[in-house]
Image (cartoon, rainbow, N blue to C red; front, top):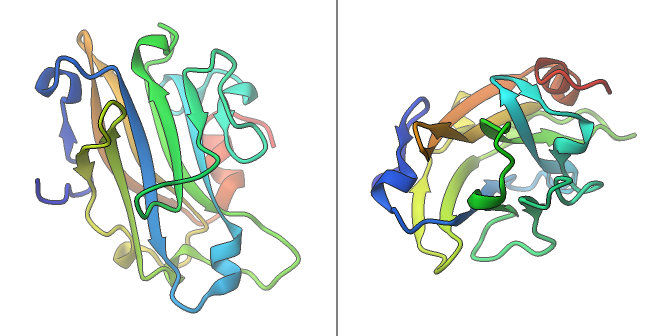
Length: 187
């Protein structure tokens, strides 16, 4: 399957009726930007409507490795070349969750500010949890970035009685603060 462009979507459970779970992985290349590499974070947000997380407990990242219902879990060790991965058990996702957004952001620290515009490449992909077969890979989202410090990569969302995946590539200049605000989360 060729890489999916921003805005493209695919009906995963319609294409693969036996699909019960996925692993969403993020790959990036920071080149020689080791500080940027060390400060990139993947986050997953479980939403009850577009851009509204159920609660701060539904924000999965390195300090909170799973959603309260355990349907979404960040994997401690990413495999197959991904930098970070999250596992989603589609059948266990609570009914009120209509969308699961996956993002990456620069974790601000006491170092000089880095941006996602310094990335050489950044892609998101979806694997079948049962056999690790790659179902989706996005185009390289990095060339469109400049001063952004957070980026929504893609989303799993309910459609009719199944699940679709959409490539997003939407950046935030104000980083995690703006991303959290957009998703209704206090920081």
